[in-house]
Image (cartoon, rainbow, N blue to C red):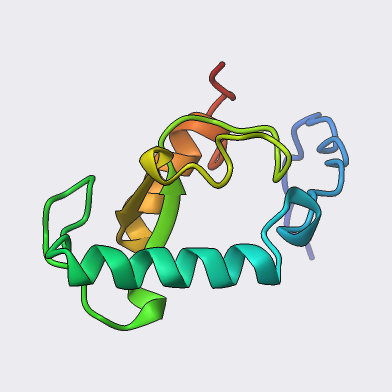
Length: 113
Protein backbone atom coordinates (compact mmCIF):
# COMPACT_ATOMS: atom_id res chain seq x y z
CA UNK A 1 0.00 0.00 0.00
CA UNK A 2 1.47 3.39 -0.99
CA UNK A 3 2.37 5.89 1.71
CA UNK A 4 1.71 9.59 1.59
CA UNK A 5 4.59 11.61 0.17
CA UNK A 6 6.75 13.49 2.61
CA UNK A 7 5.97 17.20 2.71
CA UNK A 8 8.32 19.35 0.68
CA UNK A 9 10.67 21.33 2.89
CA UNK A 10 12.34 24.38 1.45
CA UNK A 11 15.89 25.06 2.45
CA UNK A 12 15.15 28.06 4.67
CA UNK A 13 17.89 29.30 6.97
CA UNK A 14 17.08 29.36 10.67
CA UNK A 15 16.22 32.81 12.00
CA UNK A 16 19.10 34.67 13.59
CA UNK A 17 18.89 34.97 17.36
CA UNK A 18 17.93 38.50 18.34
CA UNK A 19 19.87 40.42 20.90
CA UNK A 20 18.06 40.94 24.16
CA UNK A 21 16.17 44.20 24.26
CA UNK A 22 16.94 46.67 26.98
CA UNK A 23 14.36 47.00 29.71
CA UNK A 24 12.51 50.31 30.17
CA UNK A 25 14.29 50.78 33.50
CA UNK A 26 17.65 50.46 31.74
CA UNK A 27 16.55 53.25 29.39
CA UNK A 28 15.69 55.58 32.29
CA UNK A 29 11.96 54.88 32.59
CA UNK A 30 12.02 54.34 36.34
CA UNK A 31 10.10 55.75 39.33
CA UNK A 32 11.46 59.22 38.70
CA UNK A 33 10.08 59.13 35.14
CA UNK A 34 6.75 57.66 36.31
CA UNK A 35 6.30 60.45 38.83
CA UNK A 36 7.42 63.15 36.38
CA UNK A 37 5.19 61.93 33.53
CA UNK A 38 2.13 61.49 35.81
CA UNK A 39 2.56 65.08 37.06
CA UNK A 40 3.02 66.33 33.49
CA UNK A 41 -0.21 64.60 32.38
CA UNK A 42 -2.12 66.20 35.26
CA UNK A 43 -0.78 69.60 34.25
CA UNK A 44 -1.79 69.02 30.63
CA UNK A 45 -5.34 68.05 31.60
CA UNK A 46 -5.60 71.04 33.96
CA UNK A 47 -4.56 73.29 31.07
CA UNK A 48 -7.24 71.77 28.81
CA UNK A 49 -4.86 69.70 26.69
CA UNK A 50 -6.53 66.33 26.47
CA UNK A 51 -6.16 65.23 22.84
CA UNK A 52 -3.83 62.69 21.29
CA UNK A 53 -1.04 64.51 19.43
CA UNK A 54 -1.15 61.90 16.63
CA UNK A 55 -4.84 61.36 15.87
CA UNK A 56 -6.45 64.31 17.67
CA UNK A 57 -9.04 62.19 19.48
CA UNK A 58 -9.85 62.87 23.12
CA UNK A 59 -7.75 60.93 25.62
CA UNK A 60 -9.56 59.37 28.55
CA UNK A 61 -8.46 60.33 32.04
CA UNK A 62 -7.26 56.82 32.90
CA UNK A 63 -3.48 56.57 33.10
CA UNK A 64 -3.39 53.35 31.04
CA UNK A 65 -5.06 55.14 28.13
CA UNK A 66 -2.33 57.79 27.87
CA UNK A 67 1.29 57.37 26.86
CA UNK A 68 3.82 60.16 27.22
CA UNK A 69 6.06 60.24 24.16
CA UNK A 70 9.26 62.10 23.38
CA UNK A 71 8.88 64.09 20.16
CA UNK A 72 12.62 64.11 19.50
CA UNK A 73 14.85 61.14 20.38
CA UNK A 74 16.91 61.33 23.56
CA UNK A 75 19.94 59.52 24.94
CA UNK A 76 18.54 58.53 28.32
CA UNK A 77 17.79 60.36 31.57
CA UNK A 78 21.04 62.34 31.53
CA UNK A 79 20.08 63.95 28.20
CA UNK A 80 18.32 67.30 28.70
CA UNK A 81 15.65 66.21 26.18
CA UNK A 82 14.52 63.37 28.47
CA UNK A 83 12.82 65.64 31.02
CA UNK A 84 12.20 68.60 28.67
CA UNK A 85 8.45 69.29 28.85
CA UNK A 86 8.52 70.89 25.39
CA UNK A 87 9.76 67.57 24.02
CA UNK A 88 6.77 65.60 25.33
CA UNK A 89 3.40 64.76 23.84
CA UNK A 90 0.43 62.64 24.91
CA UNK A 91 -0.60 59.75 22.66
CA UNK A 92 -3.06 56.87 22.69
CA UNK A 93 -1.22 53.60 23.34
CA UNK A 94 -1.95 52.44 19.76
CA UNK A 95 -0.71 55.74 18.27
CA UNK A 96 2.42 55.49 20.42
CA UNK A 97 3.07 51.91 19.26
CA UNK A 98 2.67 52.96 15.62
CA UNK A 99 5.05 55.90 16.03
CA UNK A 100 7.61 53.83 17.91
CA UNK A 101 7.49 51.06 15.30
CA UNK A 102 8.20 53.57 12.55
CA UNK A 103 11.03 55.37 14.32
CA UNK A 104 12.64 52.56 16.35
CA UNK A 105 12.36 49.74 13.84
CA UNK A 106 9.58 47.65 15.38
CA UNK A 107 7.34 45.22 13.48
CA UNK A 108 10.05 44.53 10.87
CA UNK A 109 10.64 48.17 10.00
CA UNK A 110 14.20 49.41 9.76
CA UNK A 111 15.41 51.86 12.41
CA UNK A 112 15.28 55.43 11.23
CA UNK A 113 17.98 57.88 12.13
